[in-house]
Length: 460
Image 1 (tube, rainbow, N blue to C red):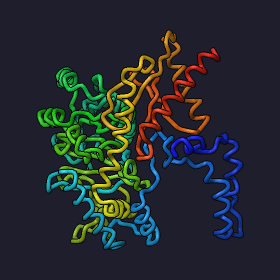
Image 2: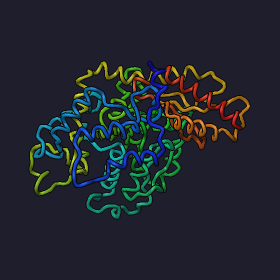
Image 3: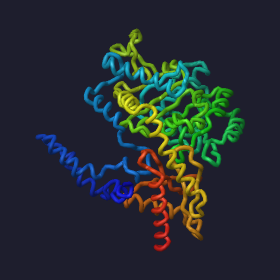
Image 4: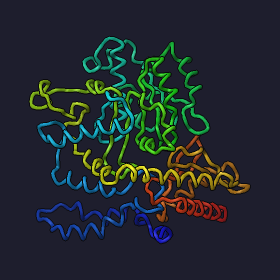
C-alpha cells in the first residue's frame, strides 16, 4: 500500500504561475453568487490537487497532519456554533470547558496543582507572551511595573539578556523584536554532539557575562525544529534558580512525547519551568491553530490582565480566558483537543505518538554503519538530519549535492523532505509525524536520495 501511495504526487507539480491560473476564479468576486454545488466542483478541480497530502507515508518534511477523527468531530461542532471564548458573557460553556481542559492538561503532564494554561494562536505567540512575562518579572525585581513604565523603567535596558540555543526556533527573534529588546539581547549557547544545549559551556557563558549583563530569561527547547533534540531541563532549571532567571521551554513540537513512557526521561525537570508552550496541532492532528501556553503558577497570567468596562470587568466572578493573553477574539480551540483525547483514549494517543519515534529510531539504526551516510545526531524524537557523502566525493561540493537532492525530490513531489543547516553545513532532514510514516517509507526515501546522488555524479 505504501509503495502505491508513493507513486502518486503528494501535491500537484504545478508552478506558482500555473497554480495562480487555476485559483484565480475563486477571487473573481462578482455581484451574483455561486451555488455550493458549483463551489464544491471548483474546489475539487482547481484547489484540492494543489493541497499537500499530509496523511501519506511520503510526507516527511514538516510538522503538519490531517485532523484526527475525534478532533475533526469537535472542530465541526465548534465551527457550527462559532463560539468566541474570550469571556463568560460570550460563551459560558465554551469558557468553562477551556478552563477545565487547561487544568486537566496541567495534571496530565505532571505540573503542580498551582499551574495553569491558556490556548494561543500559535507557538510563536506563546513564546512571545512567555518572554513578556519573564521581562515583567525582571521589572518587578528592579522595583517597577513593566505594564505601566515599559522599557524606559529599566536603568540600563542594554544589560537585559536572553540565553538560548543556537538551534532555537526563530520565533525567539520575533519575540525580542516585538518587545523592543532587539536581537542584540540574545546570547546563543553552543550545543553538544546531540544538538542539546551544552550545560557546562552555558555555565561558563554566565560567568563570563554576569558583570555586564542581566540574564532575565533562559529559553530552551523540548524538540528543536531542525533536529528534534531535547535540551536538558533539570540542570538548566537549577541554574535558573541560582541566577534568578525565568525558564521558558519551547515544547511546541516535542513536548507531547513526554507522554510516551520510554521517552519521558528526556523531559525530566520540565515541570520546574516557569512557562512552556505546546502545539497539539502537530503530532496529535488537532486542526490548526491549536497551541497552549502553560505557567508554573496561575498568578503569572495576572501580568497580562487588562480589564474593561463592558466585559472582563474586575468585579466579575466568572472565569475569562481573555484575561490571560492579548486577543479579544479567541476561537473555541479546546473542543477539538478534548474530543480527540476522549475519542481515542490515552492508550491510543500514546500509541500514535510512539509510532513515528520508533520509525525514526529504526532508520537511525539502519543507517549508523553506512559509509555513505553521515548522521548528524542521535534522534531524541521524530526527526533525523543526515548528509549523503558518496565515496570520493569532493568536500567542497557536498552542500551543493544536498541542495540538488532536496530540489529534485521537491520537484518530483512523490515524497517530501527538508533541507536545513547545522554548523553552516547543508543537511537533509526527515520528519515523522503521521503514523503512516513507517521505517520502510523512510528507507525508501534514503534509496531515493542515493539514486539522486548517483544522478548528480553522472550529470557532473
